[in-house]
Image (cartoon, rainbow, N blue to C red; front, side, top):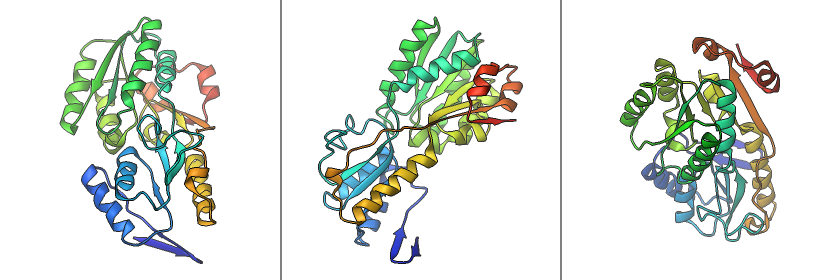
Length: 271
């Protein structure tokens, strides 16, 4: 699919959720001889990088781009790739603290992630674990690889009272967003997510980089490359704006009273 505006044509592939689809989409787009490619997840960026080392690439929503080997460094990315880092793995600790603030009775927490789709999630999990230990909360890592593993993982967590849930962002958890939100509600598990859309769709709370601002900034790099800039000369940028969304309807359903001070800090309150 493509759209045109003046002397700009944008071809895109959407709803690409696995490695095979990503490789196919990358090949299709490169066959169109683009001047620049934008990739918005670990799976997609890996596929595009494997397909070309010459066409400029601007990435978005990538966690740990240096650690994953996509760029040489943040200041000097090198090669044909640059872009915007989504968040630091230390945010796992922030999520843990926020969830405990909303659910002070919480004594057990699990962090759900797919280590294949988001290898950085292991780091997020470790920071969440450190924060849980400081707060006196029992911690459980809950890696999932298939959609069928989500239900039993949440059922096991909910088997004991006062449990909570952290959802690490990756292509898997985003793709199965509604399933996770629905099951968390069914098992009465308060959960924290990284993207506003999770809270809008019924999740309890979301905290992470401002997604719209993230894409807006990425567009500025695409523009600079189209005007002649080289990706190797454009440093990888880290997020500067974060967004806190709280769903009070979900809180009420879980018999939770969100602290007024936290509600006041929120960028969006869903009632």
